Length: 125
Image: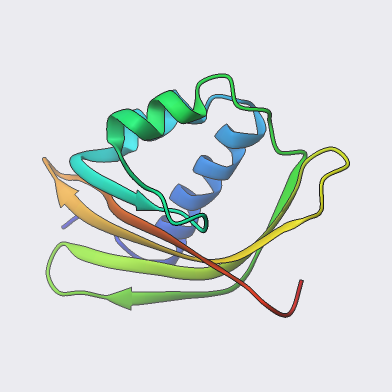
């Protein structure tokens, strides 16, 4: 049985954010995402795995991030979602605050990101 517990999913999310802080997000998400995975971003764009990798290669790193109100949603055998509020800071930019939902599925015995969605948080920044 593949571990899709709250702790495991939170660890996967933190690995992703840590990669974004190191500007290695393209490689990280290229490995983590399923072949047909999508990311739906706050700006309304929908990116497939190749577009995610291309957009993150060389992207400016985040300085720090915080994850709050983390919840796991079971989706049946071999699938679960992690829902949380994130706050990230980069340089002199205003903090990025959004609600996140990352859906993981088991592929070849490993958890893989199948769908990620950001929703702008209008309060609680």
